[in-house]
Each structure stands twice: as C-alpha cells, then as structure tokens.
Length: 304
Image (cartoon, rainbow, N blue to C red; front, top):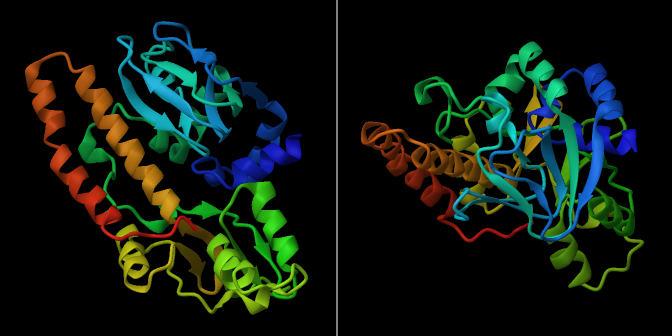
C-alpha cells in the first residue's frame, strides 16, 4: 500500500515537488479510503480533519445553500481552503460516485505548508492575486508538469504498455532507452488508432506505434508556449527535458485542471466577499480567466 501511495504522490503536483525521502515518509503516514456514491466527506461548518487527494472517482463541492461550485476528479486536492484559514470547512464535499481518496491529516498538512514553500504557494489562496501566478501566459511548465513520469522501452509489447496505462490511470507513456534518453511517446490514442484499428496483435512492439523524437520544451518555458505547440501540431502531451534529462510531462489534463482551480477560486471568493467593493475586485479577474479558457478550448483535442 505505501508503495502505491508513493507512486501517486510522485506523479501529482504539488506533492511531486517534495524531496524523495519526504515522499517516502509521507506514504507511510497517509490514509487511503473509499467513499461510496452520495457519501458526505465533510459538511460546511464542520472541523476539517485532513486534506484530501482524489485517486479515482468524483467529488462535488457545494455551498451551504446547496449550490454546486466545483466538480473535482482524479489528482485534485480539496479541503485546503478551510485548513489554511480556521480549520472549519466553508463548503460541503460529497462523493458523486464511488471515490478513492488519500487523506493527509491536518497536522501533517500544516507541517508541509510550514516547511516547504512550493507546497504553501500551491495551496495558499489567501494572498493577493498579484502575488500568485494564475495565468497560462505566466505559468512555467515546471509549475504544472507531472514530475517522475512513467516510462517504457521501445521493445515492450502493446499489451504491457496498455496494462501499465490502465493500472496507473494515465493516458501516455514516454519511451526511453536503458540510459534514460527519450526516444518517443505513446498515448491511448496511439493504441486505439495505430494498434487496435490497424489490427495489430497485443505482442507487437511499442516502437511500431509510438511517435518518435517528440517535440520537447524545458521546464523554464511558459505553459503558453506548450499550448501553442500542442495546438499547432495537434498533440496533447509535452515531454519536459532539461539539457537532455527527462524532467516531467505536461498534458492537456494538467492545463484543464489548473483552469478549473482558477475558476473555482474566483467563484468561491465572490460568494464569500464581505461587500460590493470586494465583489468588484474579484469580478475584474473574470475576463482574463475567460480568455484563458477560450484559448485552451479553442481546438477540439483528443482526450488521449
């Protein structure tokens, strides 16, 4: 169980920014649980006992009046807003379907926030907007990418690759040499279009369907740069290399998750604004957010 938790954390931001030895320690302290469809994880006004990370399933976040403000899926964390304030849940979290969760206890969460600035920066929504980079035009790939991406070898079978993607709930694998050099990328779309639709048997090699020598960017590049390349060339995953060393991968899903977090934050701020002046300040952020969302959705991408 701890090994599975370690794998999940190492592939989910911002946990992947923590030191390897700390991740190993956390995997021993984090609780794994299941919430049945319709189960209330916590109610508005109740003390928060943990930060939650969704492994699978869906969680709906609703205001005390029942209004739905956010729909969260795998790799989304929730509960931080109350934990960063007074420890009281400002909203209700309900499992919309059978949902697997990782629970990081409140004391452990506060320790991570105190000792690791990257962790604090990700979860602290209380600082002025000008101190937080919240646009694709200013975010770097290093801010959003998934570190420690899973890899495979060019001579691995299609069956092995498909099973790995299924078991880890991911949509691509990077193909590397034994020395760790990037050779290619294979996605679920490749398995569908180039393997299954072409009638290839499961024992064919991944080298037959992978995209060789994929385009890459460094972690210091802007997410907007990656978005432009993805739109121009029609792919949905961007390997991140630093002087030839594989650092991570950015996917369409990573960008959509970031945008969802930004929009949910604005909605929450508006709903809890104490006066009209505060509402006006938050409303000013809506046009910029809309421009980002339109830009991110202005092409019909495959979900691969």
